[in-house]
Length: 500
Image 1 (cartoon, rainbow, N blue to C red):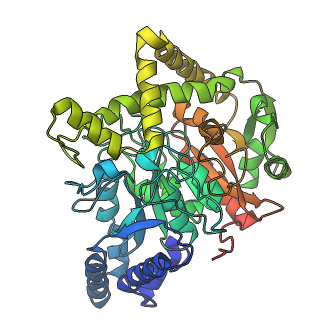
Image 2: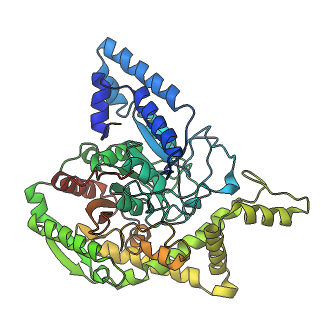
Image 3: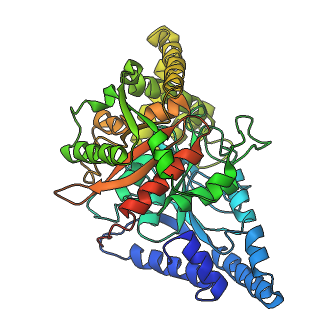
């Protein structure tokens, strides 16, 4: 597997490799890993038609080369023959879609998600579906009916979640880039843990059509890659309004994203960065993360950027507000899984109520059940009063106050997570401790702004990756991606050695 999209495209054009060989390599790696003593478990399965699509791509390339129109072909299909990893909650027509849950066992997607359609129109090939936390509810990819995904840097550690399978596949060079989803940090968190880049775009920039819903007002498709350019190009091809998704929106400055450049010295000197005082509290934060954050701050200062500490008290309410809203929406969205319309069914012939209870009791895992119960409690005014309304009020204030910060500043700088990846099993029975992994990420989803996690260092003891995030104002993906490109060119953090 070549390292970047550009390298791979150049190799395909020159004949150094073929799309078929790329897909075969990924399948062989997947099959070999399944029989390993400690499997990575990034991919759940490879799609049966990936090889046929690769052969078709190779025929197109050969025909264009013979006709002297190779460059034109790759202008029309810039990702032709390039394989990518898909998350198990994004629909790919004719392939199984289970959200890593027993309740959807055997379900086959009847259509493509819009993001899949747009990537395939650009020539990309979906390799297979990747593991995740069940229904995207988790921060470690341990809540999966297929077992946990391990961190490719060190397999004793988690890969992060909920898009841990896609992140691990990219970090282990099993795929060039990967699609994930996030509701409160599920792309940026595994990117940080696995030492790669992970983008959460502005809400609406990538269509949610064909993505199984968790918290609809927060959900967003995200992208994982080895480099900022490997995120920028797929983003430029997938973004934009979609008639099937009323919340979708066009993205400005797509050309700047497609043709990614680093910031100039003058642009760095004009850059204004805000660091929330609330994120300077070090209680519960790993000392290595704190040091890495200070190093990142110093780097920006060395480039001439102006950095100010700003007071955003509303951030202290981000975790509580996020979980009130997300779990309420999850309880509503997951009510459709009733054993009647699709997915698994447990029918003991006792009647509809028993069928509903038995199907959901057997089909959902403990974390999903926990979140449904909490969500239903929050939505029951006779029990929780106006908790949901208060959560939405806090969210509205969060959006206003974060937007106000961006009237004076270009980006918000903070760590991606208070800690690096933790050992498998160490937090799985401690929901509150697991939820606090999202301490620095949820405000981004509540404010609906874009943010990218960049690999910024490693822990001193175990050498596990540490991520920092650059958050920008709504629809300013171009700036944060260009900042990440500047970071990449000077730090060379991608390509952290993988420990088998």
